[in-house]
Each structure stands twice: as C-alpha cells, then as structure tokens.
Length: 206
Image (cartoon, rainbow, N blue to C red):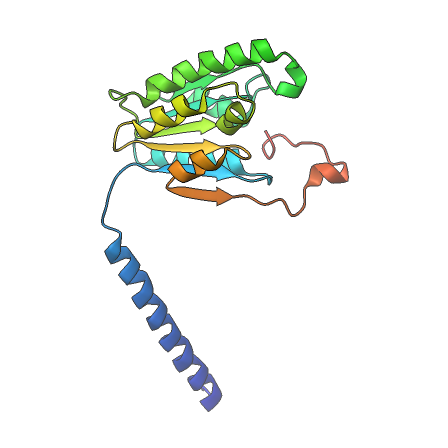
C-alpha cells in the first residue's frame, strides 16, 4: 500500500516527465528538415572509430548502401575489416594501408598514399554516388598533417549528394571542418587501460 509520501513523489515525478515530454515533442516538431548529415567524432578519448562503425552497422541494418574509407589504419587487421570483408561484400571498403605515421616515418610516401586514398573517397562523395552513409575514418589526421588540401576536402564533402551522410573520425580536424559538420561529438579521455600497462585487446581495441 502506497504511503502519502510515495504518492507525492510519484505525482511529482509524473509532472516532471510530462513537462520533459512536452519539451521533447516540441523539438521533434521543429526538426522537420530531412537530408544527409555530416558528423564529426573527435577528441582524445577511445571510441571514435567504434562509434563510426556502430553507425555503419546501424545503416546496414536498414538495408542502406554504405562505404568505409580508412586513413592511417590498414597495416594491421582489425575486427571491423574482417567482418566487413567476410560478411558485407556490398560495402565499398578502402584503406590507406600504410599504418600509423609514427611507424612509417616517411612523409612523402604517406602524402602519396593519403592522396590516393582520398581519390577513392572523393569518388564515393561524387554527385552520382549511390551511398547513403560514408565513414571517413581518421580523416582529421590527413588535414592536421597537411597531407590533403583542406579546402578541396571540405568542398567535396559539402557538394556530396543531398541524402548522403558522412561520418568523420579522428582527433582535431580544425575549425573549418567543425563549422561544416552538423553534429560534432567530442570523446574525452578520463582513463585508459594502455596507460596502466594493459596491452591492446583483440575485439576491444582492434
């Protein structure tokens, strides 16, 4: 049997939730424009690529057409690459294949690889591209290191098909990219196992 105090708490909670629902409904009503988005997942925390691939899986669940272009990564196999190649042959998948820039230590070769990989990405951003969603993983580093022309990259993203969504991951990216993006999320590092001497784990980190 409810006490008088419990009844008051329930009534207060219901009133607060009704107020919250009215705010949410009003925002949904205002958001009537439908088009593809640009999402930037940045910050120094772990999980940016994981979040990007989460959207890849979500889009595939709806039967949408998806592409993935990975900058920096590719020298080492990842679970995402294995899964897409084995189970999702319909996904347009490209990698720069050079690995991390601190491993290659060859700016000229890295720039050439970046420009070649960007050429593949640019085709997936072109006006005749059939893709619903394109993940440009670690693209921000290519801009930060000036391996790619920032203006050309931003222009291509802005000129993509109206219904295409682009997800960009990586630290930084610059103010111009943030301005272009419709949604910018920053992943903040609070604590990381690697700094405590714990090795990267298959299925978690790669």
